[in-house]
Image 1 (cartoon, rainbow, N blue to C red):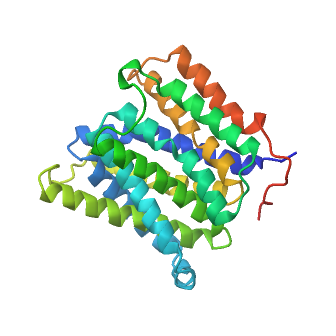
Image 2: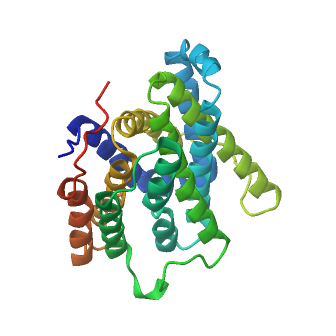
Length: 295
């Protein structure tokens, strides 16, 4: 029976926790006059600079692996699409459509990694998505099908996230520093580009002077997103793509619980039921084949 490396699963849970709590930072920065897209650009630019200082030798590694450009593009698309969709669309619908990501992961893992689409894999995805739907269900949103541009952007963001994770697994032999720089720089460049495009047509305001109270938040979340990035890389490189995709659905649970703790939402029975289903799914259903060994 397939063994799930606990450290790899734990790394993905750390990544999910940081992203599940990120709404606190972006909400705080938006209240201070920094739009989520500009906040994303600033944070990922800081992350890229710090990673370049820490991992200067990784630039040579990047030159030897030009396919990292796909990781950079996918990572940038993921962040800009998700934050842009949340800024302009219905948050619940955006999250629902974004977290159809496991479906794309199974398909891409078959095409790119040649991972078999087994019955256990399909059942894991079905149960994980069912848990997500239970947590996010609201009668007012109806069937989660794209209705407007924000919905389509969220759907595209989820697909980009799947591409990012599948490519990270494919490039698991590439140094962590090189992959990290590719992901972080992709997020910085594309979020900046999207912010400029939106500001140019008047959809969002151009960034103003950053106030002193915003600096600690930006610095803290730059460090947290760097840690999140490294945890994501460690986890997806050591787990089958379909299992990693289900574990990352835990972000929904972290967001729901944190919103309850901060008084931004109520903790409902459906949150507990759906959350339990998401968390239990990877361990309830196993493939009878060995996982990729940690390295």
